[in-house]
Figure (cartoon, rainbow, N blue to C red):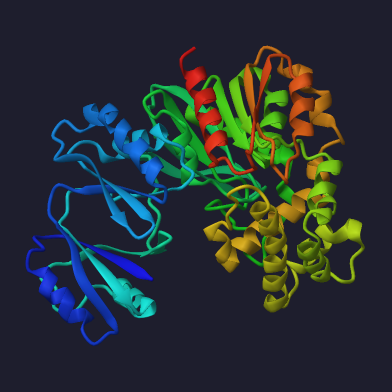
Length: 481
């Protein structure tokens, strides 16, 4: 395994290379200088597909207006089994990165973004002891450096994988904060894009998964005012469902519907475009059927309505496709009937014994992860490695599904005629193991004015090439009306 260790400094780093080598000497890590950088700053996109790297490079001239004093608009460099596109620019890096991510599908692209003011940096290619390299990267500064380290990043390849860094996202977050919505809840929100653009609300999945910054890549930031929030007890909203004393009784679908309306009033929005995937579709439908006059349009992907049959499919029906994984899931709650597995896991995740809670949350997510990995290009989400996140999300998911999301069975389909006059695009992957296309077809038939886009080889994840492209096209289409 090879590594790239990148350090940014608050002053001229020309004397840093020898000192970095000194800091690494005797550590079991050998290094060769890969790059020594000064202003201008560097943005790079790591692409594990040479043809995709070529497509991105060919499209870069379209970004020239964002780089009025570009030093180097694009260059492909080769690593073993990996192509890396470097973009050097003195313009608006945030706008550049968003635009680049929209030129090619996100599948196979790992974007790295260096925010803020132009800062000197040095990147070293390393081989050897990964753990020791991480220890050095996590240190406040290696011994003897002539400048303060502002940012450290370790990337391993092949395959390209960020080993240690805090994700900063791609879009410029203009403002963020918390909104008190009653019952002791404070919702974390953030807004980005053009405040004079079309208001758009992002509804995250799960339920309880929290907002992902990657959703902002789907919107044209010049045309959309992008508003996102973490639903009750999820993400950065307070209190967290991971707290042992949390009370979820005031966290239901209908509480969330009213929270959305409070957010609309808070931001002074008259009507907005809704975007959501998976559980976000269910929540978006519940809101739109309650407040149809407040919805301008909707783009939904991975269509769900959270009927009991859909819940049963997730936690019982899929065992026919994943028998070994389901057997392990079943064994995690041995005293529960098959029909009561979701409720049993919910109870275990509130057990007084932290060992029991953590095991239940892990077992639950191993089954959920098996569903993700069953689709083309499926990946285990990195945040699921965090026990606190697993507990937070697992408690909310089981809380909602054991109560059938407080919906009458088939309620959202039966009331879809309320959505007449609201244009919508429903994007559905044909290879989606979690949300079979039947529900999408039923919703398209029941919703006057909804257009169904069936994506061949598409899964549940919105990052797949076909899914991503269809969602972006739908949002761009509504922005042009």
